[in-house]
Length: 171
Image 1: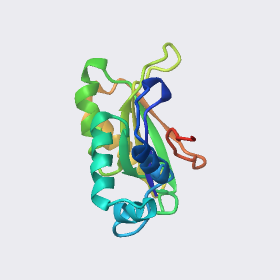
Image 2: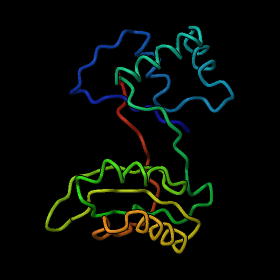
Image 3: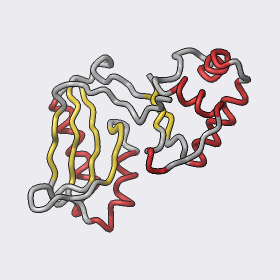
C-alpha cells in the first residue's frame, strides 16, 4: 500500500477540480501495479503525464506532503517493532535525526517536543526486527552512533498495528 498525505485544513490551499480528483482517487493508496500513475490516469480519464506533473507540482507546493510506501511490517515477518525514543541535545537533532533515519532498520525518524518532567525524549526512531533481541541490538547501534549525545533512551514496543492514514478529502 502507498500513502498520500495532504495538508491540514488550516493551511487552506485551493485545489482545482482535477487536483481534487487525483487526491481523492489516490488517498487510499496508489494501485499496486507496475505503472500506478498510468492506472490512476486511466481511471480518471486523463493522461498519465498530467497525473505525474500535477502530483509533482502538489508535492513541490506542499499540497501533498509525501508519497510513500506503507508496509505492513508484521506481514513481512518483522514481529518486533519498537519506537525507540531518545533524549539528545536539541541543538544536535538536525544532524542526528537524518543519520539515524538513514539506517536500514529504521523506517522513520522524527523530532518531537519533550514533556518534562515526565517525558525527556525528543527524537523518535521506529526500529523493526524479527524479534525483540534484534530490535534491542539495533537500539544499541543507534546508541553507539549517538555516542555522548545519548542522554537516555527507551523502546516502546508495538502491540498491534494501527491504520496509518493522512487527512482525507471528503467533498
